[in-house]
Length: 260
Image 1 (tube, rainbow, N blue to C red):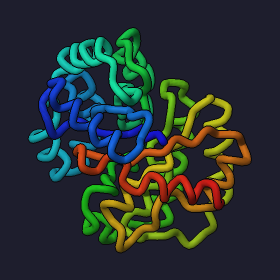
Image 2 (image 1 turned 90 degrees about the vertical axis):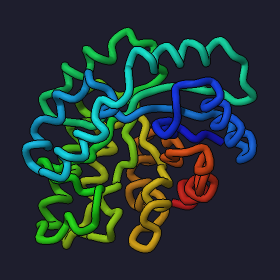
Image 3 (image 1 turned 180 degrees about the vertical axis):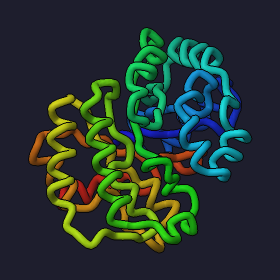
Image 4 (image 1 turned 45 degrees about the vertical axis):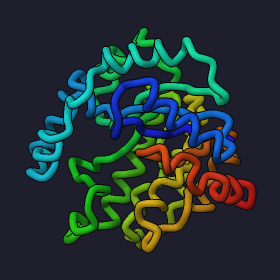
């Protein structure tokens, strides 16, 4: 079993901290883990967030607290140290990058020749709207418009040629909002773009772990079927932010892929 999306941000860049994730993987019979950091953790990526900081005082203050808190050089040095050790599970390292249109070249330049195993793109902002931070941020939002723009933005991410995978492809549903129109055409369009770019998509259990009362586990079955029909590789992931959550609901999410 693979857990391809695990954040290490709540601990130091030490081998002892990595050991805790490896131990959790062994306990959950996980054969491969993908450890990563959010792009906003590194100062190099912060220029991308200018528009969303201007859009929301909440996000501006959030990034003031959390943005640039980690060192990319230190992260890369940790990766080098980990690669010198033989672990009972496969350990890979990457970065989850928030997608912003017109910053594709900017991101590509930062990621080039860094020696990362993977870079996964994610949509966390829709035209500046931080849809996945707090449920009350949806008050007054046009749900149909937000959904359309979410999937249009996801397709642009898939088409840009910068990323290896797409994180949590339909996380827009996390607080229970649903559009008034069917999503099949958007699912097919996204699946086609991912296939043409050779990207994988995550079957990610993290949104369910956060918002179980309002969202089902993993991707909608119809989206899974579209991805499978287009031959898109699906990678299981917990989106854990601590060792204790490694592998959580991953086996159950994989069964949903088989059943779709």
